[in-house]
Length: 506
Image 1 (cartoon, rainbow, N blue to C red):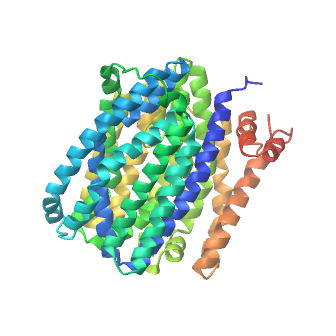
Image 2 (tube, rainbow, N blue to C red):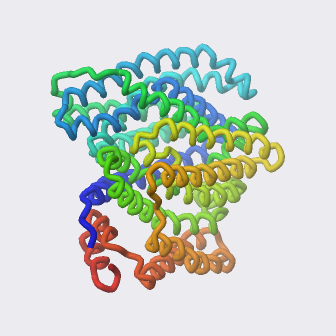
């Protein structure tokens, strides 16, 4: 029996909290998009997607990657009991990003006409003028998020990011769309939701992290912060651009309604990241605090990889088989045009998030920020060149192919780097059982798609058939381990008792 790793319990406990938050946030996010796609045309929705893509890209320049230094350095200072230095990191990062974000916001407001003309969308100027104020707001928002990660209290992130922001945004957006404000209503909902979330988040952090807030301020040397953060700043620039490059390429070659349709497909396909996004915020600090113990790092990596793959794989199968039905039911039939986009991206995201995620959280935790930057640069380059070459030929499917190829290649690159640098990898017999279980699950799902006559029936029955077959295969192959039982204990004692029986564990 292997020694019990309390980090696994922390990963499961905090991951379960963020998972619930991500589910709620995802459901509200889908609801907001469903609302917008029913009240405005694909061209108006596509215009909003383009504008927010520009904002999210510019805000990365605004924060210089510095918020990412918080959940790397603060856990180390807290581990050593140096609360004053932990506070110093947060204060120095906050002050810096406020100044830089304000400068970037002003520059964008001044250049909004140029951006609108570049995309041949004059209405973008108005959207960017209003949205530019969110750049400093997003900088503070990111500081708060990484501050929660650093103290491994992700329930506060759930309140701010997954409850307050989407609920306020949905409420305001719905009210203004019903009043007939169209694009301005969508923008106002976005801005108000962000402002209220920051206000609530700052109040919670002040109250719940009082040990840090009340500590005597000790400023830390800026050079280590910058040395760690600057490569990640460049990484974030490229990563965010990569996440939105498809919209930029589509907006340049095609029409805004194509951007809106692709965005819906991308949103559904990338929904697989919900599991990775639930575990990653606490995974990086866990790796950072144990980075000198490679055996422990590999153990935690393997547990995380198995859980991400184990939960994400059946979702991938469901979305891939029933893409057109889900798009037609959740949105409107015209968005079923993005079904191939969903299939391509779902498959690529499954592999990418299993082996470290698109942001290289394991490499970040080990301190390899420059390598993460190189990987992300490769990710962007492949995606951009692929999309630019394929969109004029294949339309929105060309953008999806470019993204999928980039995600797969970088996943392979990350695995190679981890093995070369530290000699660690996630591949075990237990991992193989997780993958093999996907075969009978796929076989069970195919008849549902081809035999049922309505999209609604497919949406309801398909996940039951696929997940049922998947779980049955895991049980039949005795795929559950002691680490799974330990993880499950943080979710449900009942599940732990089942997994801990001699039938299912080794």
